[in-house]
Amino acid sequence: MVELPTTSREWHLVARPHGWPEPDHFALREVPVAAPGPGRIVVRNSYLSVDPYMRGRMDDVKSYVPPFNLDEPMDGGAVGRVIASEAEGIEVGDHVLHQYGWREYATLSGQGATKVDPDVAPLSTYLGVLGMPGLTAYAGLLEVASFREGDAVFVFAAAGAVGSMVGQIARLKGASRVIGSAGSAEKVESLVNEYGFHAAFNYKDGDVSGQLRAAAPDGIDVYFDNVGGEHLEAAIGALNRHGRVTVCGMISQYNAVEPTPAPRNLPLVIGKRLRIEGMLVTDHAGLRPRFVEDVAGWLRSGELTYRETVANGIDQAVQAFLGMLRGENAGKMVVALES
Image 1 (cartoon, rainbow, N blue to C red):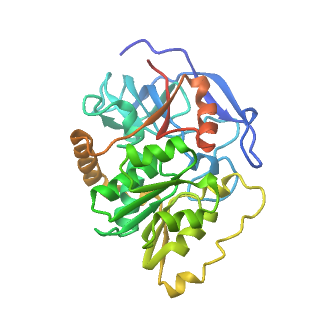
Image 2 (cartoon, rainbow, N blue to C red):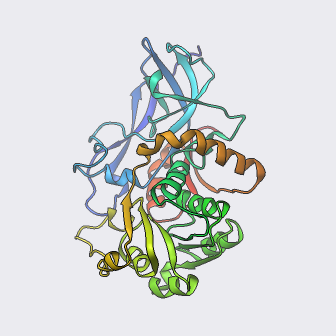
Image 3 (cartoon, rainbow, N blue to C red):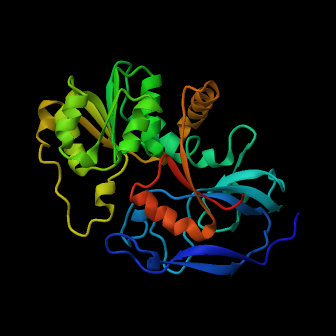
């Protein structure tokens, strides 16, 4: 056991945003580091995850996950090195994945930690391509959307942590066509030249429906939705009969202060016999062994690639989160705490 630090810095939510979060809704505070009791460990976090779902937890509303409490540490995915342990099966020096992010040091139950191997893959990938975003893409495409070889697939926010995985998995599983949308010319180029999408367009250029029709003249069979709104409306219009939609997120509404209009073409769901299904990745934990086996194999062979946008230092966590909400990241946004 190494000597424990006396204090740690951690981010607290101090006010609930109305619309877009601002830096003054958060406070970086110094707190004592608790020694581990029986069955508990202390982890020095190496990487923290910032994810879109965290925005919803800043509102005091009933949802599938409880809201953040004011003036208490926020939580989220993190990976780090164990520096003290009173938990059976976890030794000092082990690396673990856990949910006590947004802080430099975490004291938690050993049962809430999963050991990971930095020799198999870089630690940060357990928050991205081999973590929650990767499993979301894998389960959302293959299980929720019931992907079949030959399907044409459309992905919004396709250059992000989840979207880039959806498109690549679809291609590797035999999609007839993979189309993505992104918010910059650079990201559009990366979708085609780096991730192997058949076509891509910049949704900021306007007329999403028209751009989608041009990119998928024969329609689409699967839409992986992270945004709702205009993109969902365009996808409903382009979906072929018996098309499927996986609704993973509604980022167009997360910071809205007024009700947003639903897609105006919902009656098409009836005639086309469409299936629209929401998903939570926690419902698909049983897929993890197959997911890790498949994705690790694709990474080793070079058939699947990923990007990360890394912010350095605990003091940059809020700016990284806000930048992720604005779409400034390429691939997974993570915060590095150790060099």
